[in-house]
Image (cartoon, rainbow over all chains, first blue to last red; front, side):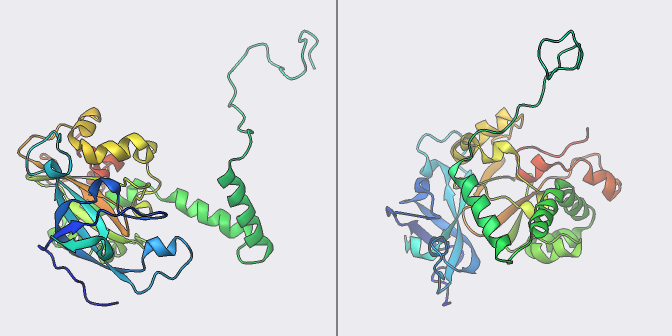
Length: 95
Length: 213
């Protein structure tokens, strides 16, 4: 376990990666920019655990908040609507 | 057997519908589950009774546990603060074990309405609310709740005005979300028991609001 790379309020961008196998970053959010809402803690990587590997070192998990209107260009609703998604650090870059 | 029947399994004079038999072929994953379970029992790692008890304990969990937590938070501001900042401890304080996943409590206010979904599968605070409703696991809810939450809520009879932000929580990893609904006006002075009765499962997912019946 190491230090969390991002802090609440940091702007981050989700990697637009194509991954084969088990993953926890939904496709709809890849490539989008959001703001770190909180650090959820450090967890063994579920993408490794799924294959009976130890998933270590533990990874920082963040809750990242995205503006709905940016995620869905045709979003029906006011500007303040958001979606929070839990994303592991190895899926995030500084925006 | 009565003589006026020309077949041998209907002993009544009237017909009534029967529960359809579920004896079609097993799916791959059903076969896999049975095989693994039987092996675990055969090798003495778990007993059949332990498996049964685990299922029984899971089925015994109901939204009433969550309702008790919410009602206490409505009645006691200090507890509410604790529930929002230390949800695990607050839940344990009322004798509800939130389990191994991390509990996050999100509060509905006059400015924000929260809605919970798991787009990847069906993550749900089962240890607090019991098993999720079927619609929560449906592909339609999972895909639409993030994309058009206001429309989905309106189909459930909940209209959120535009001056209240809708905050969707996609429960994709290790957090489990419980919505703390707004306490309805007109419930001042109610006992916690009476309050808990209006805190339904759907209000704690965010697809409904608590209201006086």
